[in-house]
Image (cartoon, rainbow, N blue to C red; front, side):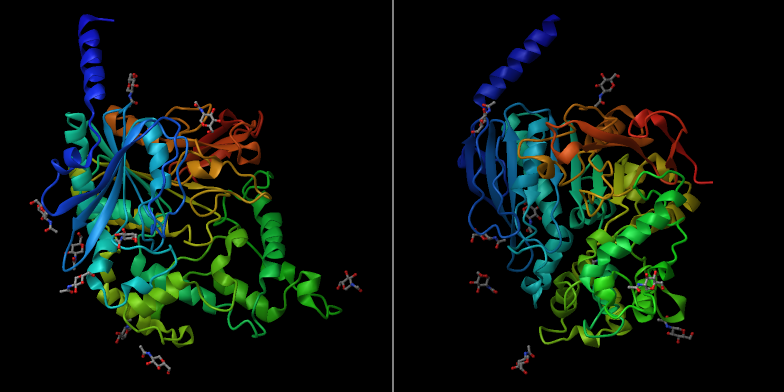
Length: 540
Ligand SMILES: *[C@@H]1O[C@H](CO)[C@@H](O)[C@H](O)[C@H]1NC(C)=O
Ligand SMILES: *[C@@H]1O[C@H](CO)[C@@H](O)[C@H](O)[C@H]1NC(C)=O
Ligand SMILES: *[C@@H]1O[C@H](CO)[C@@H](O)[C@H](O)[C@H]1NC(C)=O
Ligand SMILES: *[C@@H]1O[C@H](CO)[C@@H](O)[C@H](O)[C@H]1NC(C)=O
Ligand SMILES: *[C@@H]1O[C@H](CO)[C@@H](O)[C@H](O)[C@H]1NC(C)=O
Ligand SMILES: *[C@@H]1O[C@H](CO)[C@@H](O)[C@H](O)[C@H]1NC(C)=O
Ligand SMILES: *[C@@H]1O[C@H](CO)[C@@H](O)[C@H](O)[C@H]1NC(C)=O
Ligand SMILES: *[C@@H]1O[C@H](CO)[C@@H](O)[C@H](O)[C@H]1NC(C)=O
Ligand SMILES: *[C@@H]1O[C@H](CO)[C@@H](O)[C@H](O)[C@H]1NC(C)=O
């Protein structure tokens, strides 16, 4: 060690020894409109007890590194408040990380903070200003201030305050600021880039629910394609797997390699008529085939939502998403759609989803509750030097995969004419066979894991990063860090599939996930399950 390394280390050790984790020390870092709920030490390998009432995220994170756990309440607009949680690990890497929420939830996401603290980030999550499960929007009734907190105010304000606490606690400036979130969390990240460009240097945004004013009404509309369940055109849940199997049969070879993974769902020329029942079938559900009216429903599901005057309203679900058709099963639309119309748009709890029409869409466009929808002008974030790495699963059944290319292409159309090279600060990749934010069906066994937002807890309680592959080639968060700090822009992130999705088991497959508009192509020789048998190529 050189002499200054020795000095630096002793200073750091000295500082670490002095880290004081008490409410009064944390309070001293905060403005008067923010007050500490608690601050206490968690020892190495301990479990953090999530406080009572955190409806959105009740799961206790386990196997934590030694850290200071903090909770703060902040006064917001009107008569509202929001809270945030902060894990300050003793073994700090000098950086700050905020993690996102999901759906309409309601709560500090302590579980997703845990992986961040294992890397060494000071890691924060906001409760967005209310307690609720992810599909419960009743709290929004006549509460525009709360909706504004959920839309953008709570994450921004929590970030500003948590950074103050972090710098004061470690008695050091934060080197870089990051964000990681999926679904609503992805939307929160893109909203930050648009509205609060100074908050983060790098943003990891998975399956972003960025088009709130269209996604939520579409959630009602897509369900109505398959309702009421007594209609002749209704496709029962039990037939979804037969549809998925036929899609796989037709679309897997069409992408150029038979490997049980649909890599080019948009290029697949799917013919639903292969599923038609024969003349001798009396019970189509039992026979696993579809009637002509049911085939019509399939066409609607796989077709973009178009409004009056050929206005594009929303992209369709990709073929290959059938294993996640939660929005299409049951007797009513998902509350993520219905509650939005009832409580965010103000039509009230008695509004019936059967009254859905395009006026609802127009109302959403006009009201933009909470200003939650993200706009296309990300020029301020580009000007500040920020970086966005985004991704979306091709088998996502909750948010259509096409929403991300649509967003990116519109950012492109907004910024390229102004001389801004979008790829220089905003890149994204689509993940063949991955569902909403994480996971894959057993018929695909697609390599879906890359330490994206919300992914680590799926593999296990103490997981962070990509076990066995802790580098920026396999770990999307580290790829973002390398891009921000070393200017190494990623061309691909390698996805990993562990056998049984358990990290102590072997690696089943790895494959590059290429930055749009490139796609991964098999080189024609070598193990198809090895990443280096693949290359990123242009679509055409
Ligand atoms: C952490 O705790 C678990 C369960 O309490 C225990 O099995 C494990 O050995 C501990 N690990 C370390 C590194 O102390
Ligand atoms: C809270 O206090 C800070 C510092 O005085 C101020 O910048 C911020 O606007 C305040 N927030 C609210 C919601 O009043
Ligand atoms: C503010 O909220 C508190 C707690 O919910 C409530 O008691 C009080 O009446 C509210 N004040 C106003 C002006 O709405
Ligand atoms: C959520 O509930 C807990 C426990 O009841 C409470 O302490 C907290 O203030 C609530 N958060 C919000 C934003 O209402
Ligand atoms: C919504 O956000 C955009 C982008 O930050 C901003 O320009 C606009 O003024 C906001 N509108 C409202 C009503 O807050
Ligand atoms: C029903 O018809 C199809 C062809 O239309 C035939 O393949 C199948 O064997 C028939 N099934 C029965 C039970 O007769
Ligand atoms: C569709 O076009 C007609 C005729 O130009 C216009 O009156 C109407 O407002 C348009 N509707 C929408 C939703 O733009
Ligand atoms: C909803 O309908 C019920 C029954 O008709 C009625 O009693 C209630 O007042 C209605 N609620 C609202 C908010 O309109
Ligand atoms: C940046 O590059 C240097 C030299 O290759 C390397 O040692 C360092 O780990 C990199 N840092 C990050 C954050 O990727």
